[in-house]
Image (cartoon, rainbow, N blue to C red; front, side, top):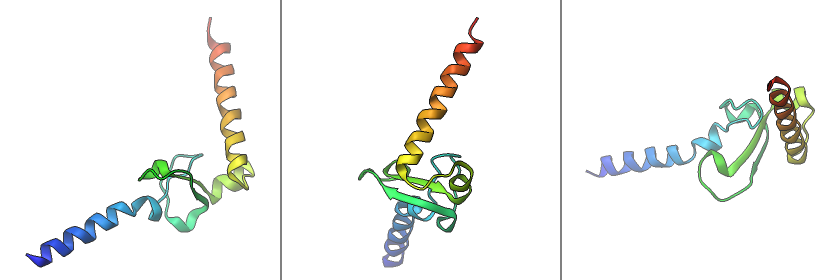
Length: 91
């Protein structure tokens, strides 16, 4: 009985810490192990992937991202380009 409780608690703790062990990159949306993530900041107290903002090393090099402000600027630029492309394709 105690073994079941201990195993259940261990599994629950592991599941709770998966976003810290395997964060999701905010640029490429891939889940990567923590050593491949260069920027990893807590932005809210919500549990899971939405509480953290992370950028992998590959995206940091590709888009020259050094901080979360650079990530916000990149997101704004991507959104504007997407809207321009949709407006251009609209007959």
